[in-house]
Image 1 (cartoon, helix red, strand yellow):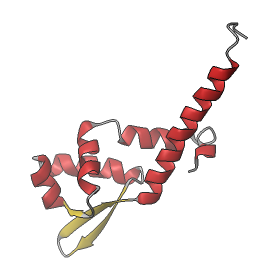
Image 2 (cartoon, rainbow, N blue to C red; image 1 turned 90 degrees about the horizontal axis):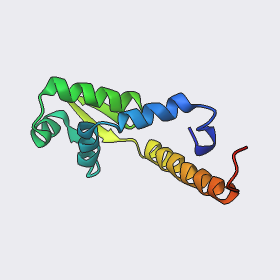
Image 3 (tube, rainbow, N blue to C red; image 1 turned 180 degrees about the horizontal axis):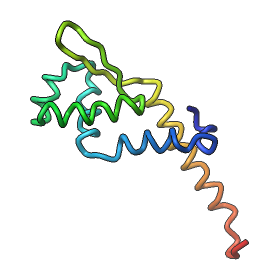
Image 4 (tube, helix red, strand yellow; image 1 turned 180 degrees about the vertical axis):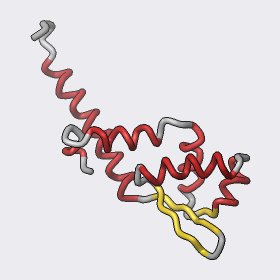
Length: 110
């Protein structure tokens, strides 16, 4: 999804923003900024139960913000850089839209 498709696909943009609307999920993203992490590392770092962490990782994965891979019995998670770029572009487009609207304000409605 690009910034131009925000209006064409608001559900996809909403899924991204929903995934970011929880403090635990933001903490997960922060931990993954340093690179791929095993679920056990995230569990320890966030002091979270594995079931709770799995739920949040699923939300992030469904939104396309993280990817996972299995190695033996361990699961490793990493950020998806392309989705973060898309998210950045969406936010920038919202800012640009707001600035354009601000310039057109004439003090009248309609």
